[in-house]
Structure formats: C-alpha cells, structure tokens
Image (tube, rainbow, N blue to C red; front, side, top):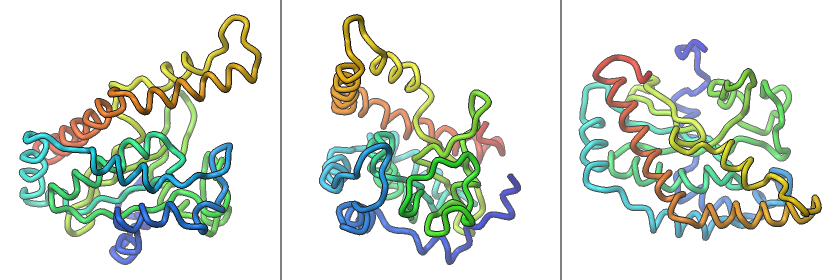
Length: 237
C-alpha cells in the first residue's frame, strides 16, 4: 500500500500501550472476556513479564540498535500489533520491548481485535469498529496466495513517523507451518481427541524449549539486518 496514506498519525501512535501497560491490560477482566483464538483467553501477564525478565540482548544487538537509532532518519518509534493468545507474540513482544529499550525507541502496542476474534481476510473498522483493523489492514501478510492477519507485526518509524520497515509473525529460520503441521498431524492409532491433546502438549513443550529463545534472538537479528539495509541501501528487501 501507499505508506504516505497511513492511518498511523502521531496522535494514533501515542494512543497505543507501553509494554508495561500492555502486560497489565492482558490480565484485566476487560481483556479476558474478549473472544480468543479458538478457546477462552487466559491471563498471560505473568508469562509476558517473566519472558521480558529472561530476555537479554547480547552486546552486538545493543551496539547495533544504538548505531541504527543514532543515524539520520534512524528508527525512533516502534508500533506493535499483538494479541497474547498468539505464541509468536508471547515470544517476540518481550524481545521487541528489550530492543526498543536498548535503542531508546518509543514503543506502542495495539491489540489487533475488538471483542470478537477477527477472521477476515480484509479487516476494516466497518466490520470491527472496536478493533485496530485499519492499522492491521496496512500490514497484512500475503503468502501462498492467501492473505492473513498475522501477528505480531512490529513497524519501525523515524522520529517524524516515516515508515522504515516492518517485521511479521516469526523469523525466516523458524519454519513454523511445517513444524506445527508435523506436531499436530495425526499419528497411527490416535483418535481425533488424542491427536489434539498430544499436539497441544507438544506445541507447548516447543514454546518452553530453548528453540523459542533461539527464534526470538533470530527475530532481533532479522529486524536489525533489515533496518541496516534500509538505512544503507534504501530498501529492507
């Protein structure tokens, strides 16, 4: 889309939540009564807080983000679209908070949905007036001939809110679709209920494994590299 026509104005950007505000919001009755992704929401605030405390950038990450932020028209603001039911958000939002913190960037988090879980391929405020569908519509994920409202989305802007780059869902080295399909696929002799229970258990084990921390760091690597390309070459691609 034409980035100069973004709905993200300075006023809209500052209306988003800080990381601390978002973590507090996640545990509120207001949030927990919202429709989740196929199941009721649960309070993930403690998980997000502990993930943040456990997330540490290495010296290269810190030096790189400081270098980028100090460049003329370098990244100064980060807009994140997230929902805590997403394992990708639970992995990457704490990392994004650390990255913004290290670079002295202003971070604002926006929930994707309103009261209902959005299943639209083309979200709009006309359809979901209590959501941030208009922001989400600017950063839809087009892959395999389909369009998805993939999250998290992390959008990097200059101090003047000029678009630089956005990161979507997970780093390239995490082949999520293939991994999840393998985990959740039926095994010989399993009933449908057995497959779901085993798949849920194994996917949770994956989220608690070192690999999710590896992929969080890879997300930081991908973001920093893309911003470097944007500032040096003029394009993140």
